[in-house]
Length: 209
Ligand SMILES: Nc1nc2c(ncn2[C@@H]2O[C@H](COP(=O)(O)OP(=O)(O)OP(=O)(O)O)[C@@H](O)[C@H]2O)c(=O)[nH]1
Ligand SMILES: [Mg+2]
Figure: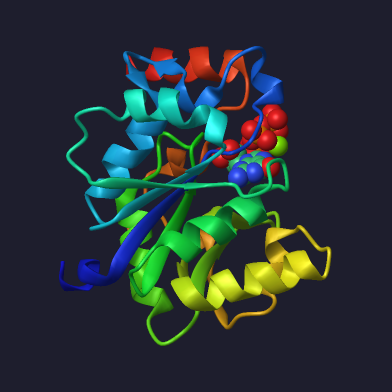
């Protein structure tokens, strides 16, 4: 996999998991393994650098959840908390050192590394590649971006008081990949599933267990 040399993984985990209840979904046990660890382990198969973005108060628990990981993980904490995922992506990308970075939310334990490889391939020569779902939604938290270009775009969007991830994407030259292309590329249907509630955690655990 020759293109892997330039791919970082950025996991965003600085949210408050309000739909999940009284616990941080990032470190929730999913069939015996903390959710964020599942994401990091999958990312590690196609990246050579991993940055985890979270709040200061999550560091200890996330570090423990990742103990013994093969990947070398660095942390990028939010300078200001609760500014939304775009702020987390920004600081994560500012910390990453590879030309491109796969940005993945901590609550997507089924992320398919094959998708990230496809997106990295499509992003070559551009500032990123993002999947456009059939309903028109862009899958921005499982996407590949050119690290410095997207970090600058995030900063510009945030400075303009626009916290939407799409506001940053609009500022870069990003390739769109149609959802319909993923099946032929062998990407797992479950890749975009996110675990936001206890019910979704139970459902995911049933399928893994
Ligand atoms: N750094 C940072 N990351 C965030 C923030 N809000 C959400 N995220 C991350 O963005 C991803 C998608 O967000 P959500 O699914 O809404 O997660 P959440 O906000 O923790 O959960 P809810 O409170 O239930 O919406 C998750 O990986 C979150 O950790 C934030 O304010 N800062
Ligand atoms: Mg949220």
